[in-house]
Amino acid sequence: MLNYQVLSRKKKRQNKGFTLIELLVAITLLSIVLGLFYSTWWISVKTTKRTHEIAQKYMGARVFLNALATELRSSFDMSYADYPNFYWGPDENNPERKKLEFWVTAPDEIPVIYTYPFYIHRVTYYFDEENGKKVISKRVEALDNSFPPIEGPVLEGDFNIDIEVIQGKTEEHPLPEKVIVTIILEDKYPIRKEISIYELKQSEYETE
View 1 (tube, helix red, strand yellow):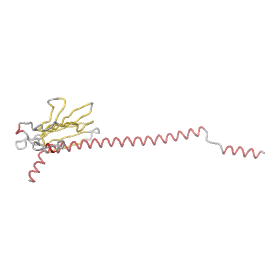
View 2 (cartoon, helix red, strand yellow):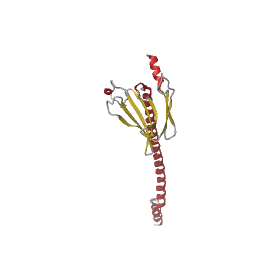
View 3 (cartoon, helix red, strand yellow):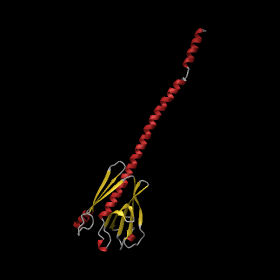
View 4 (cartoon, helix red, strand yellow):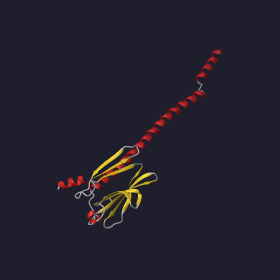
């Protein structure tokens, strides 16, 4: 009888479950592990998102600079028609903003149907600031007013832009010699484009 009671007590001890303290310790450890995993995952998501945003901004800035370089290299002299050739400075209609203005043949925004015979267009870039963010907008006008002006934003965000115009004007070359454009994004890394207006024209002339 005594042996049966001893065996019964041992069996009860063996069938005994987790205590409340053991359960709390297990839950606490599991919470810590899950918290560390979630924190690592969330930091990874934020880093990936931030990297993607910066890459998009750099891409937008480079697209703008490449398009501007293409247009400036195709700009030409309009002084013979009593039009201002090239202008960079305060906007006469709004002195708080600057503008860059020059003349080109048909830009990308103009349908081909409008480019002949009146294919000369004035391109104006406006540099504004709205709600603490920089906005660069573009306006394209036909010399003969054959279609309404086309205007819209081309780059906006948190950046700084600096434009340096190297004049070097002569009778043979009335346009500026170079235009140096520098865009500085949020991480302070500059994107610089040095645009030689006459270099491409000269190479095309020599090829012919």
